[in-house]
Image (tube, rainbow, N blue to C red; front, side, top):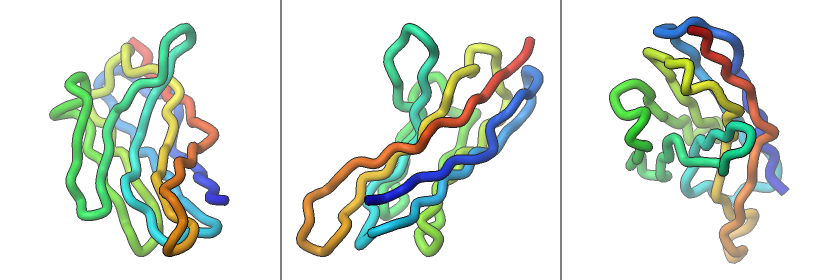
Length: 121
């Protein structure tokens, strides 16, 4: 079992910045992709950004040029630097990791508990 612990959410004014962090711990042989998703009430969870083990990234169109995802493989940690925040970025942000607990185990998904990001206008 892998635990993901997020931090860094909060309240910020439009145009401001926040940095989210997510640290993975537990039975980890390897972590493939790590990513950030977000969800608002009444809507489905949506991808914000994702980063592969080798560093390849992909972003949702609505955050391109504003958000940057990065990871520290030695610390099993992924970050999301969010700049030029807009009120529509308000959501609960969830960390995700695709991992293997052991060398021959299948790839599994783990989710964090979520961290609230609120952007005021």
